Image (cartoon, rainbow, N blue to C red; front, side, top):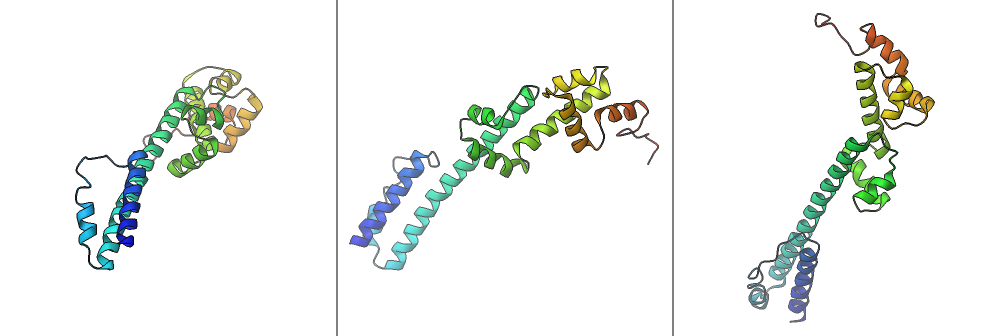
Length: 187
């Protein structure tokens, strides 16, 4: 009888936690067969299997909900970065926006995107800088500021590290039909 009571108690507690964490939806009659089943179980393996199934289901629900929340957090952060890349943005700033700790945010972001926060933000900024270099006559200093860098030298080093050439060389080669531009007949 003690084993039955503890099995039922642990299952109900696990489901309570799953409901509380948002992983399970409470249904009024969902537990109506628990007590009769537990009381009718004559063999320990039958009770063990029932217990394992119920605990596993509660755990799966919590894990699924966490995955959904993690994806939502990262998507919110990515959208924020796309909209605000020109601002002075830090990991701490974005973690406050998505309302989780910087450490946990950094971990989730890396797991979801395969890139660190800085790598992702840098890729956005360099991509926007390339667009501006291709389609405008802004100065390097103006483009630097427009994509979120306050130091033109740092911008140039970062651009070269991520693009293989300096911004000036990139712009000059684009004018001449070089980097990134291929003739449709080149293949």
